[in-house]
Image (cartoon, rainbow, N blue to C red; front, side):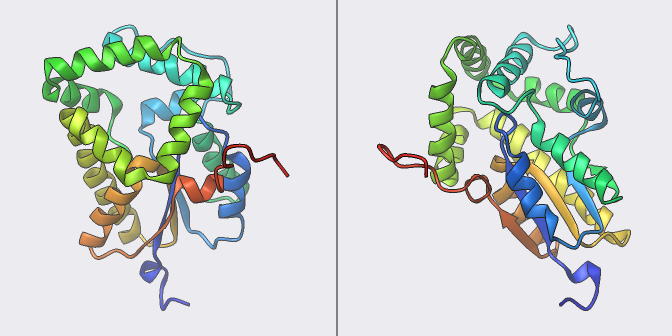
Length: 240
């Protein structure tokens, strides 16, 4: 037991926005004593993802083309991989917060500010690669993407390092800067007496966000996407 709630570790739970994690996420949170739940969303994305309506939205037309393409890709993969509309894990976290009468905190940067920083930071090569990737992603079979998710789950650090080499500007803005900002927001939440917090974030954020919190003197416990999903079946195995 901890002497106070502010000595308790923050629980970071790694997720994937296009995978159905409702059952394992609920199981992870079920017996956890919590003061609050936090999610990797800002107010604009929360309004869309946590809406009672599950009708797909096309998104603002003023966003860059590659961003709209990747949004369409996420929606398509969420449906093809059985997770429903993208962001199902965020809806589960919000649902748990309501069921347990816990405050829900939004800890991500405003999406438009993030995109503005991203566009300024990206090289021409990165823009082209993301545009091409978004277009190809719309036609690549979902099973191919699922294999990539399995590969990531087995070795997330190696996968993230590949992203850093291919997209240094993207990694800096979408991972490093946001990790620091989310750590600041979690520290502020903690300073308000909400020490026992579970934060649901994309799994690529877990290691960097944990490091950022520890540098701020905050203990951390993590549950990676690989642990949350369970072991990936080996080739030739049959479901039991």
